[in-house]
Image 1 (cartoon, protein in one colour):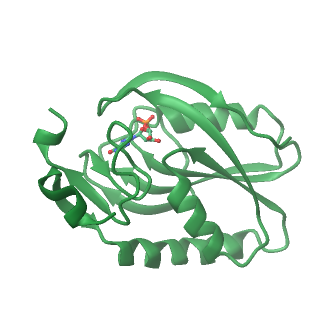
Image 2 (cartoon, protein in one colour):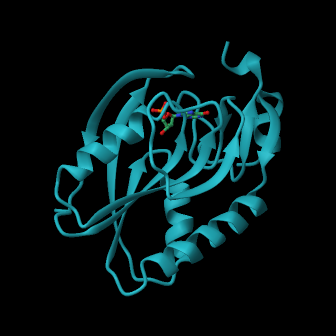
Length: 183
Ligand code: IMP
């Protein structure tokens, strides 16, 4: 899927596919260096982190393990419901393991702070967070993020895993949605 396929629902391309890949390679190199000699479990948060998880893992040299959690915090609107619940838990026991949570975006921070607290209660060796996007005005809940791809303004974005009402996830770039597409 590309810009032409969604026509005037797309307001702007915020981060091109090339910039995404270049930044993810940089993050992968940092994660490789930071976890050298240790076993790392990447925990991707479904569904938004599918693309960043796939590209980050492939850009890394360490032989990581991968697992997934599904969490619901948004309805089909554009703002957090504030209610976080686990829809799918990990298949892996993380006690004694180094865990890197891979997430698409931090907005209010509710989802990630819930998730990190939840994982920390399982007695892992460490828990760190990698997010592709961080909204500048965000953070009702403080979250310690070790690896951030891009800081963006407080606007609703789509593409590269991020959806509006389950659409646009398969755009290869991050874009902004035209208001008529969600009002
Ligand atoms: P938070 O709990 O408010 O930090 O929201 C985190 C979750 O909300 C992310 O994992 C996304 O699934 C979703 N989300 C937040 N902002 C956006 C956006 O701009 N576009 C699409 N999804 C978003």
